[in-house]
Length: 293
Image (cartoon, rainbow, N blue to C red; front, side, top):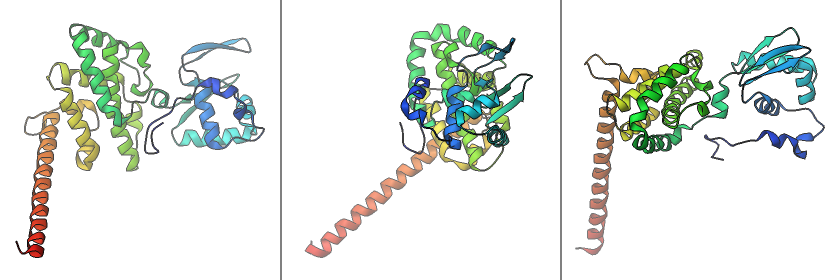
């Protein structure tokens, strides 16, 4: 587990069988939310409820309100209030069915498959290794995957359905998506458009940056790190597709940002060198004053 500033842990469903989960008390809201993540479907399947076959997709549950109440050790009214709170905050969607209630965890893939922004280097390194082995295969594979996932929500894509190279492009795209989405949340702006971001509109630009535009993985890393620390440019770039668009000077935004990032890096290096020289001169001057040499 990483520090409090980010990261995630794996929590297996089998852990709910442990005695720690069987305390005879009401759940806190946090515990209730964690149970919802654990109990929603990891893969889609159909369930038979009172003689009716109901589709229950990945990240969904069709447990009744009474079942949730028993799970949380709450009243049914407490469950309704809690679900309304989650729905208002954009965490779930609630759908009343004839014989039960369908709960959909918004951005389920974000909780289950989340590659951390700080793991961008790892994601890009994986891509580099796989490119060496799969260069000829990449274009056809990715075209098929983009077609298959054309209408899939980016954060809900099951990466296990992708080939290894597509998985790496997907993880890099998702890292940019997380970076931009988290910034919008930090400044209290709506993330509704980001939450509906589709697979092909975010992953395909990453593939094209590497395969068509011949940008290196190190250049992708440089741009990502710069956006993570620059308030102005993170507001301008709201998608990976924007990186391939041209600015008023006819330059692709990716190239513009890369140039700015490198100039900024060189400027800091020069400043660091200047301050280091000044400090050394000051120390030598003090020594001369003391020794008279």
